[in-house]
Image (cartoon, rainbow, N blue to C red; front, top):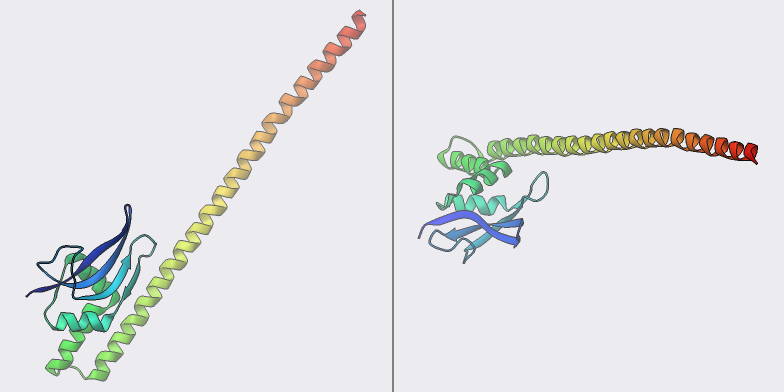
Length: 169
């Protein structure tokens, strides 16, 4: 039985939500699975991924083949790196402590990148709101300025007509 690590779709139409599962390759996309490894929510920016890294590494060590998208997600969260490091430990190229140190250093670097991205997105959103508010204020001021002369001209015309009517009487 060949096992694949793949995405199983859940959620509403237009609002996908995926489970990351280890499933028999012959099973349907949303069918029976062996183990749920995590979740993936692409509806938010940055995408929200919850993954049991040790469970994913266990399945990779047992020969499970990830699909292209699942492989990208596993790589993003560090499961592929940890699998690689565990293979190095098994072959004797690294010690357990060295592998763990490399993995934690990678995780810290990755989390710093993610935090920087979220801060950049929130900063860009705040700038866009400020720019939209300034544009709205400019439009409102222009509208007020355009309305003032029209009111004064109408008032002058009315007062001239009232004076002309008074003279004729």
